[in-house]
Image (cartoon, rainbow, N blue to C red):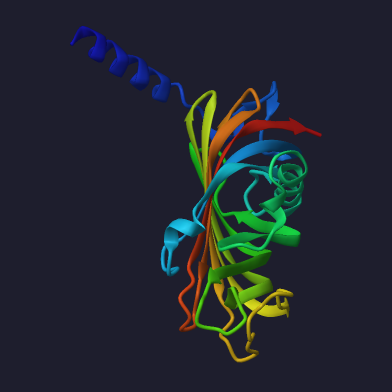
Length: 266
């Protein structure tokens, strides 16, 4: 019992040490003072599609990666931006598995894929309040691009083993962003963001798409980011993405990336 009380006292003491957000330090300098940070780190990814005919065949767990660049400005009314890119790392890891372990890694098979496109995921936000508190709320907009597709094993189509149905393809999308920064104590900050992207253009169909339709409704895409950032540059968290399928064909891909890494200030 004494140990539990001591632990609670330590936790309360750490929370009480929390300063104003504009006093949060990062590698010995103030964080959020219109500085740019860059990171390349491993992630552990979980893919799923629970409405697929055989959802267990659409589960993918494994190491991938994340590349990000962000500019942070806590001054009220000023813009911050964050850019993420996953596709390049996804492709290199797939090719690497094919060359070193499993040639079938690049073969077409039953699965679901959700990743960014060539441009990546970019968020722009503006701070609503001064950083003289433990928290700050920011709003803005995003511009994301997505590659999405699901492949199913079929035996009802003559001379065909696979079907890749809508929604599928390369999408461009944009929408609103809400971001919250909260200082837990003088060495740890919580950052949360939630965005939704409305597709406005499908740039192309997948080369192996099965009977793609120009009339199929464009999907939406959601994203939730949650990070714990330390003043030493080390961070950890999660990045959750999903498709909002607005059509009748069952397909609801989900991607969860668990992140742990380090960002350099440039």
